[in-house]
Length: 348
Image 1 (cartoon, helix red, strand yellow):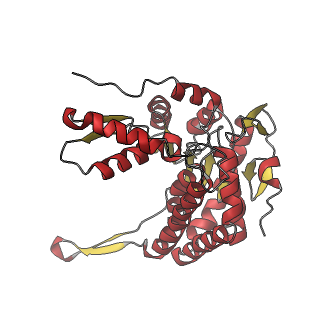
Image 2: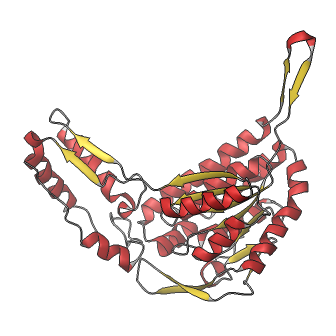
Image 3: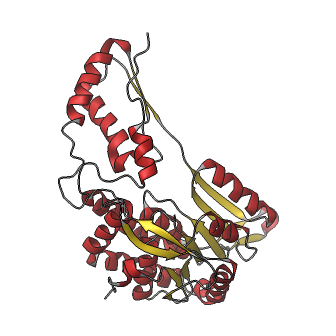
């Protein structure tokens, strides 16, 4: 069984198959968006512990990469089952750490399980191939894992973002070091406990906590073979620069805002529903958030009236309540930014 008592209290790094406290850096506060109060203190990771994480992942790589795809897939699928058995506890942790409504947290976990099951099922099919070449020769290609992957994730979908990076990497035989966002650091450590209970060997998956400097130390580390990042364009630029120095493979999922354009022939009910979802799902803290809604002049007043009417029916409240529609924004600073926006402008 998973030890839920340590999920908040820590320690919050996961190295060599256990929770450990970093040795060489200070703490940063993890405030709960649900209450605004201190949830826990998290110790930031410095160079020595990043080195330890890389060494752990590197040591685990030979045995993990030699394991058959069938075996690796079975372990990932088993991890999904463990999440299902502990879904409510993990969802509540997500609410405490991230602030989203509990029903959204449960839905996010469905995608986490789906990712583990999908790549668990795909792992046995990751094989080489052979082809006939001109002149009667044969060519053979073998798909080999890259090695040690370093991942840095976002706070809006803490476990989902993590799993979307980790599951395919592990299915292909790589080992992983993940740095969560300091604004929502807790769930990726729980994933370590889940993978261990599923039977994944120690060192295959590791977690290092920290703020920007920890991310810089990890992304510059020459013991990594690939970098994967979800977050802002400025940070992604720096990670790409760090990856270039070691000719690392780099995957970036960067922030973006999506315009929503509504013409006068649109179904008004569906248009309003779509705009509400685009702007209020996860408190609007989504990289595809519809922050710009353009409405054709002929239906502008009708649309705004209906939008306001429906928005007033939404409940902003305790995210642990099942009927809450809008939970807590990730930080006080973010809340002030949202409240300071001019929401509706009509252009002639």
